[in-house]
Length: 388
Image 1: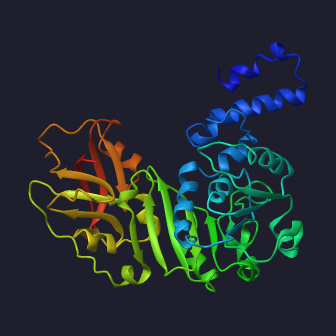
Image 2 (image 1 turned 90 degrees about the horizontal axis):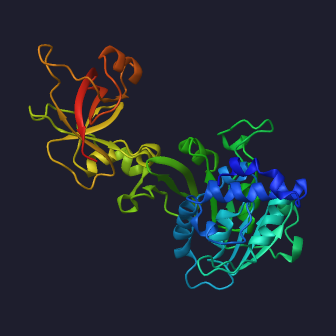
Image 3 (image 1 turned 120 degrees about the vertical axis):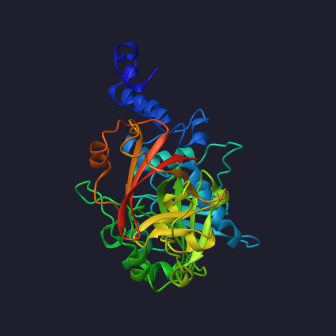
């Protein structure tokens, strides 16, 4: 039974107070909404869930475990490792990261989220190896201004911060200085407590601008996507300045590079391919967000259709390319029967997808693709079949 149907059954639960009834519905909805996103939690009978917004904004289990994966090598062989999470929230990242540390400090200003964490951290489950977690109900700034609070000694193996990306009116913000807490202002204090920092930032973040604003530290950057949708941008201090673009749906296709490699890469101009058509490539969303526009062409020996069109071509099929692949074919001549149904995409093209579809009198769907793009400075329309 869905939570919507259950909400209509209030009369069957008269023994519950209104507060108990709301809590009951919150638990049913939380489990229902996050079952796919957080499968380990969903399998635990007495797991507590927060309100809907917290469930929607939290990390997925897949991205939380990936954070633990990139942190783990720096902790191997070390004793007394401790984690400070200054923006605990629902605690998904806290809980999965805590498996790597001997002691974790969870900081959260919302008292109800702290109550939920106090309960969940005590649950014993073989798939979730929760270790010693201390809960601190205060803001990040309050905790940092009193580093001995709760018997905490100065110094952590890792400090994790996931700044809130909404203003006081609930509107979304994307610039670091507008997030809460402001990691630009806090950076000097954070570096006094740890040389290893992990920031989880908005997928809409301007990465180059963020690196300039946090230039006191050398950062490794991780652009993390799932099913071709960028979910997170991670900054990890203490690295060599590498950028990793990864879609966790196909992690074997992770693309790692440096800004220097991208700057030095040579992108070959487009030339006429086989008259029978050519293979067309579009990098996945993580690579495009990371900005490897020229290097991806160089590594896979592809030709870029146009300096500002992030589509690439080759005469041969690259089966390990991290993104979508089509095989193009000539458009029908005006005397031939026109295509009636297709999936329409535009990339650096003067018309929108809807306008191009209307111009060509196309219905949505089918197996064919019509791709409007710019090739060597000229707008063209390509006909293609998607291979993957």
